[in-house]
Length: 132
Image (cartoon, rainbow, N blue to C red; front, side, top):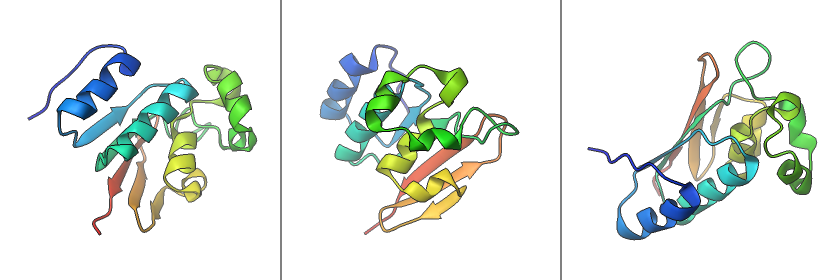
């Protein structure tokens, strides 16, 4: 069972977390600040499954550009929607908030998350919260 809610994430996500049990958050939001904010909210609300689109490697598998990892947080905010130059930001946020090794590896496990990037056209990634 699932519920699809269409709306501005900034306006709806906090309400959803406050009123419902969220088991999966699918993130295909490209602006850096929105991806970072929504994943932070999901982690604070113990969402056990995070899914991401557009996390594949350039040029063969998608819009992720690993060189963009060297940008500072302020620069990522400044270029939040500049996908041509810096790529899409989902995998960068995965690295910052879940495990930095995901920038170079497609399969990463740590004490909190099991993360895998599937080999698909643009890259589909999933993070499962490990059980304590």
